Amino acid sequence: MTVRLRGHHLLCLLSFVGEGYTPSFTRNYHGVAARLSAGEPIEIVEGPDDICAPMLGLAEAHCHNDNIACRDSRALAAVAELLGLTLGPGSVLILDDRRLQDLRGALALGSVRAACDECEWSPLCTRVARDGFAGALVRGAPTP
Image (tube, rainbow, N blue to C red; front, side, top):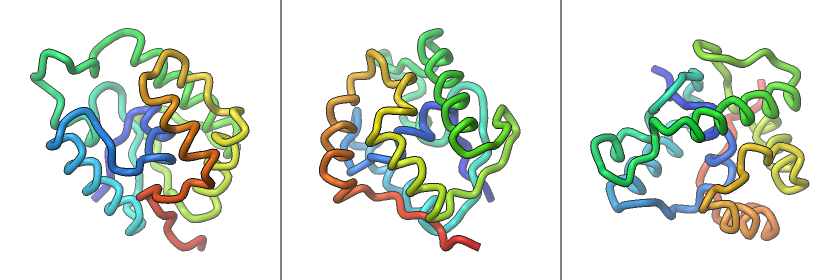
């Protein structure tokens, strides 16, 4: 099985500490974090993904907004450049410990945060990064 993720969620998962939009969203995200930490591969998708699932159908859901699709594109470009990969819909990525640490380092430095402009969670991500990602729930799979 794979975890289906849209582009900007590649950045969001780096600092997820258990906060979310609704209790069902947060519960679901905990499950996704556990799957990623167990080494389940990531499949890049366009539009709503496994993290968005509990929000679909809710009035406050922004999953289909154009600005979110733009965030996805910016995030994918930044992550692809950092990791030296070509990433797009259908790409599969293993989030091993080395990649997770590289991504977290870049997030802390701000070099992959172009997709974070105007995100309401940006201050939380900044705080988590400043605190060395203490409490972040996603752990990298062992590096092969």
